[in-house]
Length: 321
Image 1 (cartoon, rainbow, N blue to C red):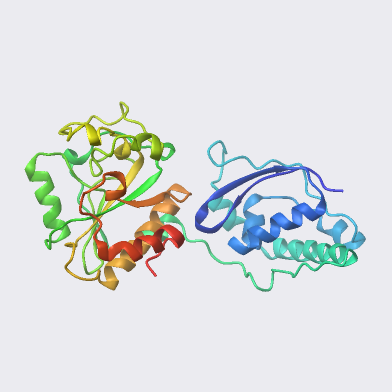
Image 2: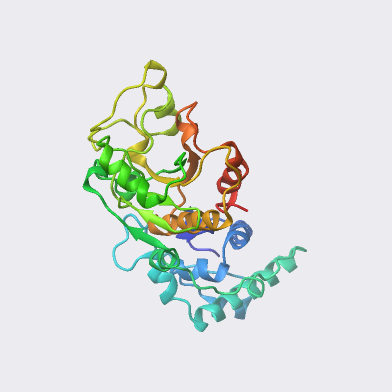
């Protein structure tokens, strides 16, 4: 007999999946196997706070019971965060429970002529880095400027990470000074130097003008809106072909010091971008879609053709290699 399972399970990259099912044992095991391939099964179940009646399952071998306890979606959850729960529940007791549950599952599937290899030996509990830990691993200098902030961008509005090239060889610090001095109000949240050092000039929860106008029809295509959170100060329309304006309110902008056609991106710069994306994912608790600026507005230069392979990798598995 299987009780109602309603849990929030974290998978690779902290994407949150919500399941509300009352299924057969076989269907539940299929779900568990899929989740195990994406993330440590031990951590996944521990993070849920699911109460498993392991002694019954192990002793009787013919039932696997999950309590009706509901773990709410993080957006409405009160109390400890999902990450805090994950760390708090990494105990030997949880591991023993899970081992018994999987052994009981093995017996039930074997009786049906099927096999369910225990994933516990292959997937060891691992520490999950917090956003603060990931940020601490990066060489980030903060240089916030009031002129770069154009509104509030809470987590509920975050959808995209937009990548840019600076189209100049100047340092990130020089780019920030130039942006602040020209009075156009344009900036990005981060600039990554060739040596992997990073300057952050806009907080993650603020709107800045890095994406500008996009191709007409792209607001609908990308699921963004031109609405009142963006003050639009300094913006200048560029034509009917690019009339949509919504990406700034739903994205984080990252500039890389690079000139198109000048050669490859240094490994240190790419590794810094890897780490920065991991930090942003952890900060929000979900994966934002990764695009480059020319996907939003056709014809602009960034990112360069030599970045195409890296962009494909970032979109596929969120690292450059």
